Image (tube, rainbow, N blue to C red; front, side, top):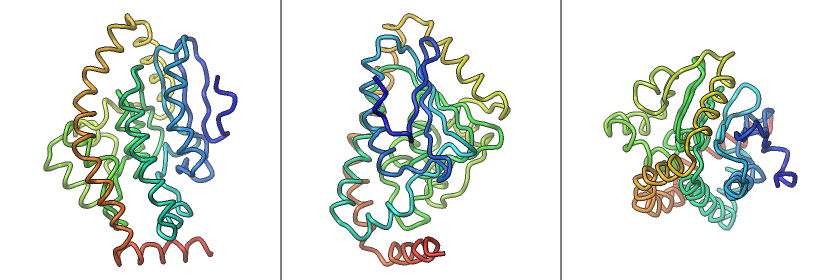
Length: 259
């Protein structure tokens, strides 16, 4: 069922739990195109897996995910059609995750930045390593925060705090993420995967119809927010690529890539 997934996305069966690993550690699990497309499609496969009762999502290596990758970002700037496809894919990923009926636990093993942060916080429960952090850095590089924090954070934390961290792009350390309501609890790094799997197995043992339909009921709040916010936010993010700020960011990224 999962054999044809790209190497950048791994699925491991652990009894009724499926462990989904972002597997691009050399690039800090950045969302290169094959990984992005696989992440969109994997949720329907997991939903059709009769043995799946809970999912753990984590990253290989020292990061959860660095978010978008620099070559893809440069291509979005230079190729309007690729940019439009990327924005459509961003919406599809949010919709797939929010409509997926099986509980998902994020095991945030390292930095979760940009799209990586968005994906982590869209999970149903978030366990975060004590030495990890999250950050929505869209604004800091000149982009509207189109596909993540602007939609979901106001349902999870203070609107004032959501604005502070979205406007500044500051890192949110693990303990602060818990205090804000953007993560459930911190875990010692060496015990993170064990605790995430244990929690997943506990939830997998719950009556499936009850837990799955409860998730769907609660996610109606997020789906309503997505339908309200994302059409404008993603369109505005697309407009960001015409600004001088993005041109300057691209020049910096190109200089870094040429080294």
